[in-house]
Image (cartoon, rainbow, N blue to C red; front, side):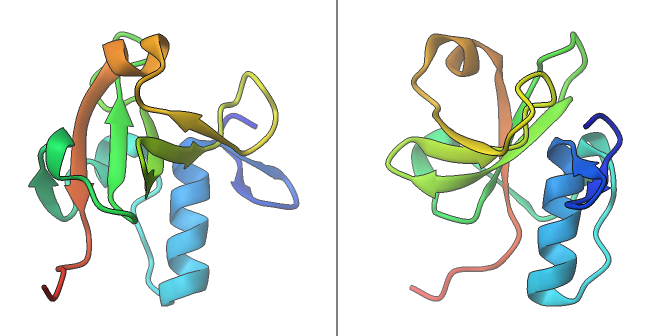
Length: 110
């Protein structure tokens, strides 16, 4: 649901991210995808790791949609038009053309 920030009322893409960050890490996270796109460190599409945030331009505005990268070119997100949280492929034409950037929130200990 557009503007939704809890599972009970429905989640939009950035609401899903803010909710997960609050539940998993007990941190208050920015609410909008535009604000979320300023957090963490930039990472190239070719260096993505599970847990990185992936941002898309779906409305003519940079970073207007966000999801979480899962690995193997897959990401999870809450598309408001479809009504369910789901997994999609970054290689799908729609998402590949709209990919904007990725951000890493947690440093990797390699």
